[in-house]
Amino acid sequence: MIKIKSKKPQDVIGYQIQCADYHMCPICYGCRSYDPSYYKCIKLCGNNLKNNVCNTKKHKDDLIAKMLTKTTINIGDLINDNR
Image (cartoon, rainbow, N blue to C red):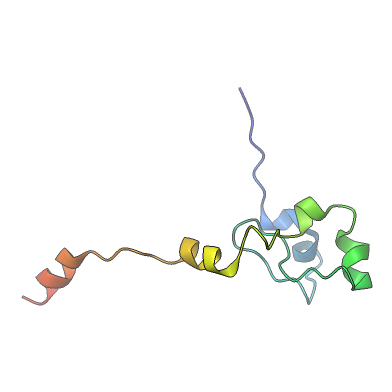
């Protein structure tokens, strides 16, 4: 049997230390505001980028918006409510 490891927000350094600059990705829970020019980011997340930092090239704002919003409306319910 294959065991799949699920990632939780608690697994990310920025969440654990309550970093003021940490902006959580709703898809992977990684930090969306990681900046390699900040010493603090490199010091805390530099050795484990895959687990702690969001890949913003994959998880773009429009993709996140599509995943978090409901795209269908049940017209039948609207018609029945108006009768």
